[in-house]
Image: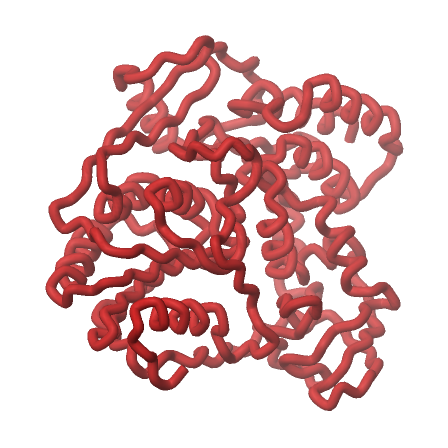
Length: 448
């Protein structure tokens, strides 16, 4: 595994656009040398993954990550390897969010205390040591670990049977049962309560647009910016309706939006930005040392070539810059913009958030998972290590936001922090935002 570890280190520092942004080169090298000397002669691919991910974590880059080999995934197909429940945070508690079809003992909303005699908080803390993130964004770390809890538990402990689980049920009774790993799907989750006064006008797989025409509140949920086909017509229709109805407040819900296509996110911003803005990304002019284990897809190669032909608007010493400029749409919304975010608001969604914050929007919820100052993305190289088969994604460009906030490495912070409540079936964050906006506009909202 030492050969693989060396290849990983050299590829990271050669291909990543800014490997020492958050961790000094000396510290990076020292960590690598220490880990290399301590590597045992024999390691399973699962054990090596945990060590390799810790090296990758020094980048503090949420787009640079490592996963097991394709063969490893194929070998697990159909096997029982995951816990029979997923979790969520509710204040200072860890609750069962959902269960698999075959789980009969633990129920949704039960409070987890320990698994295999280890406190759940301790487990989450250990998992944070292998989880990538942008800069120092704690919200991303907290939210993504709960989403990946089942997978990370298996990464850390492998296959186990009769796992002791301690929990409190709905009657607050402390119980302890033994569970086995499962290969069953999680049960379908019931829809959360939807405010009666919000009438849905448009809805698709990645977005929902609704309005309360009485109080003049528009609500736009965007789950992803990945769509590349219908978003142009969709936003034109949405903002045409908002203008027609004379809405005074717009709520943009970017929770759980992990990002997507940069043109999509920026097109959306043209309906909200008061003036022309630029989208900038760059990377070092010096070419990386090539190796045979890293590759870039054909479409990405063509995109990279197209970017290289684009004239530079700005010049940065030692860097090749790329800029796309955008101007406001005639249908631009000119009233109050409110944004809801959480730790999964990442990548393009975090860049959109940074621009909206710069424009003066009011933010609710929790800090974004993506850093306000920018990210590393656009094109991603794939590294496959020759001995272990571990796969690592390494972004090619550094993306700079237009934020003037000098607190580098943190997400867009909310003006009003609202954390999810204990009732999984109720969206208390959205309800509180609507209630606050209703009070501000002096229009009482019924049914909340």
